[in-house]
Structure formats: structure tokens, C-alpha cells
Image 1 (cartoon, helix red, strand yellow):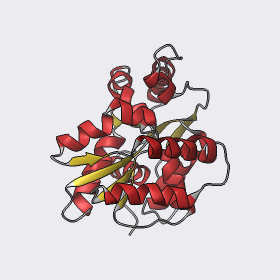
Image 2 (image 1 turned 90 degrees about the horizontal axis):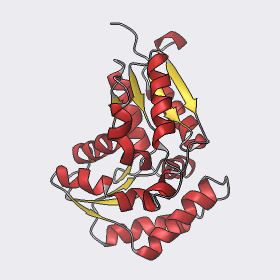
Image 3 (image 1 turned 90 degrees about the vertical axis):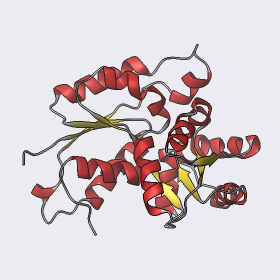
Image 4 (image 1 turned 180 degrees about the horizontal axis):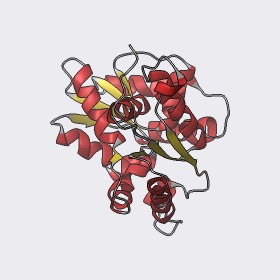
Length: 236
């Protein structure tokens, strides 16, 4: 089998990009350096904010920059491209049209994995940026799988955005009690599982060791799909 190269269209955000690459390495079954997946990483932190543009189209559009980055990854010989940012998948089709290399969709992979692994799954809670929620991207994918969804209240969404932007992205201490309270509210509302639909939330899961089967980490799902697409096995 020819070796496959994974392109990471990153910088959205920078910490999440590095964490994703680390996940791919740690989750790959490999006994030597040579058995790991080659990766080309563009940690392009100056890409305009995705949520800002989705909510206000007068803000800078991230698509031209991300499409150019995708083309660069294609020119660098990548066989697959991933975007370790849930919100950016609002622009997934536009970015995919800019290149011939297939993009792996984090939304589809996450919902499919939840459906496969969470027993009796009927309703999924969505924790994501305001942009992702407003776009309806996860809601549409969840419904296409025959499932229902729940989203946080307006107050909880505002608090979650503070955690994402003013704590994780800013490199500040995370209010884990508030985060877990928001998770709990989604479960009280009938969620059988909660998706961490923002890559900054995946970092919280790692830092606080939140290893529960009903908390589904989109970054881990994307890493898993990437490893398999590149012809490697998942480490047991």
C-alpha cells in the first residue's frame, strides 16, 4: 500500500491544531517512527474568525484564506485534508470545491461515531460555538441520522462562549465547574450523549480527563477517521 499523507488545515485555533496532530500520533498503532502517518500542518492562525463571519457577513470572510490553504496542502502532496475546527465546517462544501483532494468531515464522523458507540442513542446535545449553533450544521447532520438534538439555553451558550474564547483560546484557567454544569443541563433536557462540537472543548476533555462514553469528542472522532483513511490501525 502506498503511504498516505494527511494535510491539516489548521490555526483554527492554533492550540487545537497541535492537539489534533498529537491525537493522531497517540491513537495510531505504530511500533516505530516509520509506521506513523506523514502529516503536513498549516497552523495558519491569522485565518479570520469563523463565528464572527457566520454571525455578521460584514466581517472578514475566512473562505478565501482556507481555500488557498487547502490548495497548498494539495500541492504539497496530501492525500486527505482535515480541518480541526467544527465551526469551519459551515464552509466545508466551498473548501472542498477548491481542491480535488477529499476532505474528511468532522461533523459526519462525530455523529456517526456517537450513533455507533452510545447505546439506545436518540437525542444528542450539542456543545459548540455560537457560529456552529447558528449555522445549524450539527443539527442538520444529527437529523439526517434520524436523531434528535438539544442545544444550550441562551444563557448557557453565552457562558460556553466565554469558556471557549476567554478561557481556552486565551490560555486562561478553565471554569470546569461551569462547564460541567452546562453539560448537566443538556442531559437534564433529555440528551443521551453530548457532543464536544468545538475543538477547544476537546482540550478541556483532555486537561480534565473527562473520559465518559456519553461525552463524544469531535477531535478524537476526526483523528480516528483520519488514521483509518490513511490505511493505519487505531491503537488498542
